[in-house]
Image 1 (tube, one colour):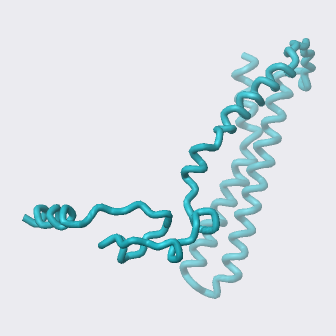
Image 2 (cartoon, one colour):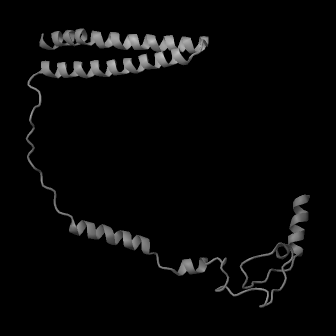
Image 3 (tube, rainbow, N blue to C red):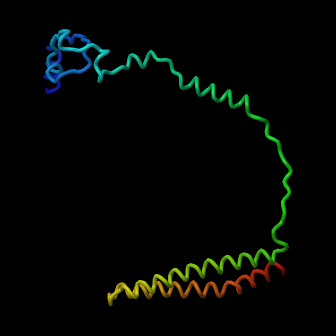
Length: 167
């Protein structure tokens, strides 16, 4: 029922006239009126005009420029030449590789443990008797202990791996 009344209102409206104005006032949307030349500025002088028709007439340069750049790149590119690569081994044996791995693991674990120990001391000193902060400090201290223990046990783990590799 409501749809029929809306279509009837649209059908009763007079046909819209084309004008040179790009902006439509709210009153024109309901009942278009004739616009005189003095009320509407020309399209060239209107700073807010929509130049879609000008855009449609402009040549599409982007695809052409892109194709031209690809063509120039392909024409100027030199052919790739494979060079022989001489690799020099920096380690003499598997034992030296495992020793390097041990040193790296020990260094990383000790550094992390030191960070957690520092955090534990700072939390303990700034906790001001707060039970939550003291518990967080204890947790950080336990993490630091585990880190130092891992750093101390790393040589043992590497020795076990050396036994598997050499066997």
